[in-house]
Amino acid sequence: MFMGASPGADRLRAVGVRQKVLAERIGVSAQAVNDGLKAGLPRYLALVDALEIMTPEQRQRWLTGTPETTDG
Image (cartoon, rainbow, N blue to C red; front, side, top):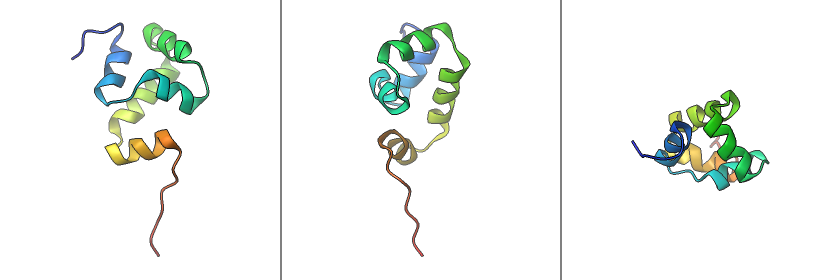
């Protein structure tokens, strides 16, 4: 595991997501994400949980807001 500012930030980094990118996606400042992860706020940790269980493709689609397409 990374030796960072907080376990939440380390987990986010481990899935390859920058705090700034997450902040843009959820409409808050990067500082709010940083503070939320440091404080262990459930709303931010739940987002990290969700990002961890997504596949890389799902994570990229969610972060960019690209809708999933279906054939048929």
